[in-house]
Amino acid sequence: MASNLQIPESGRKSLYNVFALKKPDFDKLIQGLSEISGKLGTRADLVTDLEKNIKILSTDLRNGLANGIVELYAIRHQHELSLDTLCSDVVSAMSGYRKGSKAKRDDKKLMYERTRQLLTLESIDKWTNAYDQLTNYERAFKSAHIQTDMRPIYSGENAKEIAGIVIVHNLGIKYVEDGETDRMLYLALDTNDVNILIRNLQNAADRVEGLEQKIKTIGEKYFYVPNSLIK
Image (tube, rainbow, N blue to C red):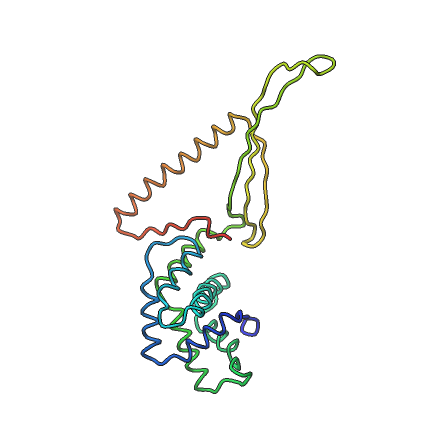
């Protein structure tokens, strides 16, 4: 992994500026990143939340750093890397970024220490764990739509006489397979099938209400992470 980690240009530029910050300014950066809201939504929401707290950097650098931080947390969890390994990977990927020259030993030590601080933020780590719990399946729901129509039923030898009408439904489910590939599944349903789906989905919604109350009772934090995380 150490030789394969690729950091996009926007992320490298932002990290380079973070590494160049004076210690008081870097401490302010870490403090700001630690104060993201507890309301967890999509990955884009988290990036936006982080950007608002990266006040020490110029606006054009904030998005690159926010996206880079979120991506590094995701890489660590997905590949089950130790913190030391990932920090070393980042240092290797960043070495020689400025004017193509190799980083000095002191620079590498500073990069390692600051990367470690960026990757030990409890608020972001909890969010990433919640995301992994939601998406750690072979297939994950992404979106759905349903088309409902009526079809005529003909009778007679020439099939010109309408004997009746039936209502048909076509359910399309978009899902992500193995965390990467978008796929579609289409199912033909009758109205009884639709009612079965409604009852089961309502049962799930009712269980959520009960579980939320239980979570409040035991005093644990509820991480609501919608499936719109899966882009």
